[in-house]
Length: 158
Image 1 (cartoon, rainbow, N blue to C red):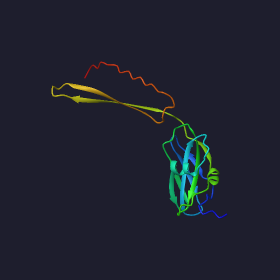
Image 2: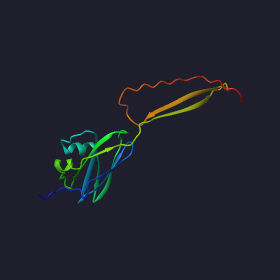
Image 3: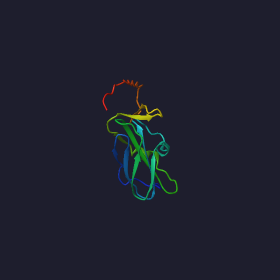
Image 4: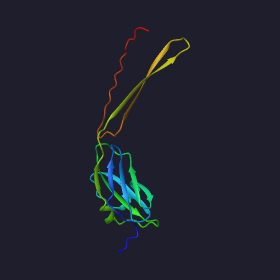
């Protein structure tokens, strides 16, 4: 059976960071490559899960696809598929053969930033307004409670 869609010359190779996976691919003829990462375990039941959930690139040969917005320290299953320039898509059996499991790198973290803004009034007195920013690089898997305690500190001297 002659396949109208491009085939992978070599199995796609994966490299992960804490929030992304890069997939290096090489295909047999011009077309598009689609790759998607799903939290493990994932049993693929349709190629459209990959096409509509992932990232894609049009290519003539070698390409790198970046899948972003992932969670740190998480196992993912990555599937890839191809289509030719006239929309002949890879079969589900061939897509399943591209399955790779990879773990995104460590670590989940919290960032805390504090700044003081000084506001001067017409009466030459000033008001210090604290500004805080708190950020997470991963969505919490359970409820998170954050307690912030602000204490007044007396300043002396000039």
